[in-house]
Length: 203
Length: 203
DNA sequence: AGATGACTGGACTGTCAAGTCCAATTACCG
DNA sequence: CGGTAATTGGACTTGACAGTCCAGTCATCT
Picture 1 (tube, rainbow over the protein chains, first blue to last red):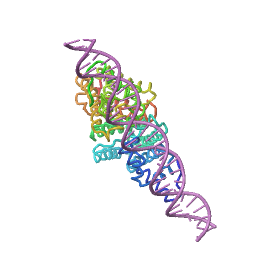
Picture 2: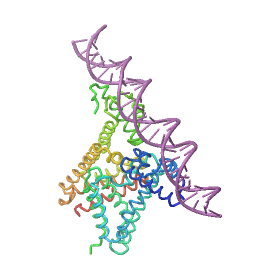
Picture 3: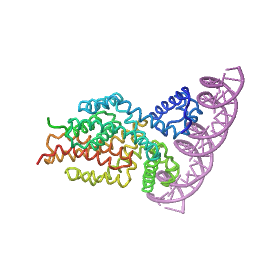
Picture 4: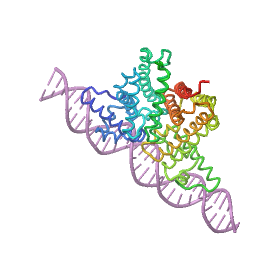
């Protein structure tokens, strides 16, 4: 995977390259992103790219890893709150608000990369899959806390609910991207919430 | 959009081209699909491609339209049955069985194209969006029939349930593609079914 | 049969992008 | 300082691909 930078200057250059690559890939797609454009945006010269990455595939893999981190970091403040019903609702509101800001463009960055790369680059598929795993784990942990604290009935299958909730989220993003309408995500997440709500003790 | 064939032979050639293009695009992605490869697979020569299609974008648009039709035609036998609970369950079983056959590869063809093309080709985004619209309409019609016949409570919001169900399906396919595990789709669809079930009259 | 227009074959061109190479520059350490 | 390794710049090579062009074939109608 190329040379790892040992100096602060090198780390900064590498970071700039990955950030620029994320941007270009988001705009043009992985196949349509040219190294010239990445270099121009970073800015970094051709040999810097090949100094820090073996080849284009290697750079795209770094983009995939960075994308996982960014998507999850963006929700960090909400993950801790997933152990209460109100926190769950606030999280969904946040996700819908993001889509409204973006006018439904872009979809889920992880899923977008997955659709472009999964069938041709199995190693990248695995990277992106681990992003979903981490995401789902946050949801599952939150639901498990709710079950432990009595906010959900103790027999609620939190593993299933977490998978199902993440699926609703991802599917809602797909439909939102297709229609340029965040309402699709809202409906999908309301469905996920309603399903979880069936496991709330009837006071 | 290129010349429309007037003879049977021409129609057959055009069909072969689109079918070959679908296959190559599924394997290599839209950007990675070369016209040489499409021509070799069809088989059809370079000028046949440019006889029936203006350019590569035009061909990809035809692929998108054909993909909509194929995905929906593949479920035609089940759409009619979505007006009963058992039919709904059979439909989900069918969808999961397909993924098991494919070992979770490929995801939803419509969503895959969407992720590759939506942000750069708005016209293709609209085509694929209409595919989702038709899909959702089948689900909604089935649920509406159930509500009309008393299999669902009359106040069930079938528009919401249909959107939410399609989102679960699409999200389940995304996770299945990422993990190469159809269980993710099973969980997602079980979630959708469980939500719908909350609107079944408690006999 | 011959004319007409639909259809087909494949060589050719220009462009653009990935990857290579080597020389120049910079930071750091004794 | 002088040496050494890390880092940087950009020209160059090679190959692939989209799109063009024109000559040739086939089906059909009179």
